[in-house]
Length: 350
Image (cartoon, rainbow, N blue to C red; front, side, top):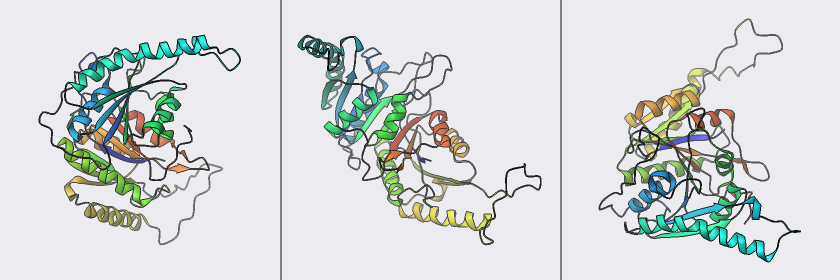
């Protein structure tokens, strides 16, 4: 399972679903987010080179402007017709690929120049690589940004955001914090909600909660928003007398009562909130399904981003994605920021 947390900053979109032009923060304060001095934005070559249609670049520009960070616009592209292979490759094909990538870089440079006029330090990178997720991770391993931003789009038939395979692979493999930008009509300066797991029920390192809260504090400060903490824990439900055949009730210790579990979660959650100075009115401890309760809190508070801590398991440190977490990722109507624990190593190699 993933450990959940939310944050701030989203774009309003027009009725047609397009993103508005980027509105930079005027006279932005020199706010440095913990370690965030370099941002990598993934450019979408399937859309036009306008900020209104490149929400990842637009959001990256806004954050870079607010945080005083450097911005790298990253393009990864591939064309199977000139890919060749080790048996049929040739100098001509290699030259064709180089020419292809350079032609695709032109609109990226156009955006970079537009953002540079806003006073940002912007660079561009264009690479030939496939699959896209691995190409992005390899770019991250090379340039070592502190934050990666990529956009998501509504599914044409379902009319709601569906994470692509690329998104899911990045959630699992990207070694630095990954912000997935969704189209939304929510408040772009909604509260920052950090959902934590103070009991470490999911084999999550305790320090990851601290990392999430610190990141939430810095972002909320930079964007002028409030920080909220959230934690949901399941209730113990007694098995009914008519249990279906083949399902045996689980015997629980006599001292493991619903009240004691609630008290333990409350104690640890309040200790975490007190440590970071989060007031009671901005702390939300609820009993129930993390998926349902998180969605309700996001809707109620008008949160504009979700930050999630992800844990790695197995010899390759693959990120474990539970079914509940996958539903939350797809259902929440706001941006998603996924943060790995310190020491995570991506299975994708440079």
